Length: 261
Length: 276
Image 1 (cartoon, one colour):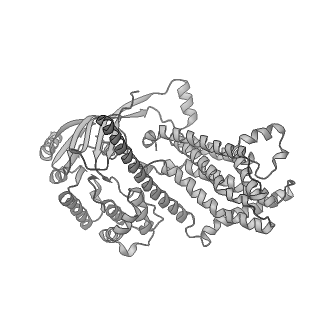
Image 2 (cartoon, rainbow over the protein chains, first blue to last red):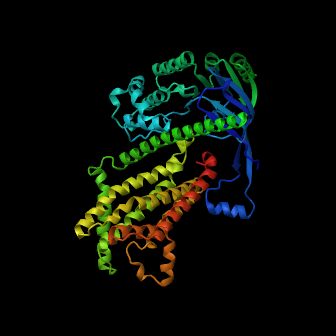
């Protein structure tokens, strides 16, 4: 088994030339050949020396840089390692080898609403989820109305969230996650939730973050047209191997060409 | 000369920034902790009319049941047996409750751990704090029993915070160990429920130590719960100041468990995300 030497450095100040700098990152998952779930099985296999792992390379030697204020797209087919890459950048997963450097506050929009407790009311959940996202109590108090107004759910504030529709939950989640002006915003196909009007509102909000607040955006999508429209630069990853880095237009063209033949 | 000054200045700046970021992290973590504790309370007493009063009533009723059982079936010569019982039971419930909740806290927070960069130790620590707050409410039950049996408190009750710190550190350490191990082996969940049951009978909660054989009386001194219970009974029931030795034993057990807990947790937490 190889030794883990991956380094993740996070600096909340937007300093240096790059918002995100990924150098030579590889991610290895050890997949057990059999499912081992109990201590007994584990010890038995260990004693018999039958404990084998298959190494699975989710990412191989990925390097790229994202400048401050840039909007950067990641494209690739399902299971090609895009989300793994985003998880490494957001600091949830540490890389096996290589290094990842992030300068600036992060707002992850990866599957929002993870911290909701559906037995609690929306009001209580806004505070709870805000805390989990790293906001201070004062910040939430000051921006409470802004969150509620953006989600347009003021009439249902005291209702337990299990009575909400999934679209309503997504509205609250998006409002909480984007009330802050982050230096770096990570968007992982979350724009597919909500009705048409709310989707537009979300896109406007992201656009205003990019244009008015100089926020760096990392964008993952299957929709090539969306990437080409929103992003300036992009990387194309296929089965964990980087295929191409360049302007979003070039990368998207090459990507769609390769899938037509 | 200037080089020395440069480095000392650099060092000061560096240590100041480290201090600052540490303080900021502590502030953030404490807000997350209080939010989670208040969430747990809301969930626990949701739609119950008596609400938090149950934290007092529950140990009282339990004491009543056990007192009836033990006054008719087994008889022990203990003065104020109900008080003896409830003091032991409360400490036991605190330890078993917080560790059992702490145990599953990591894999129950899988959805969060997979998505947000967060100090993972928050989850087991929060469960311990929640049980600690609950325990503080339950102390009202002790006051009621003392009033009923007309046991006057002595100034030794002021040692209560000290005992609570010992138990807090001990439970935190144990929860860190268990929650980390449970991520990799769910067996720990089943083992722990059996273990805590055995631990209850081994902690002299409803019998006097004097009924035990000599060997067992020596062995029970290694049981942290028994040490905490004895401390509790000393300051509340018997009005004696626990000796320096018993203070050191309690503190030692708490700190060593915490140290092991932090070590194990830090070693394993990087790999949690691959298993939760």
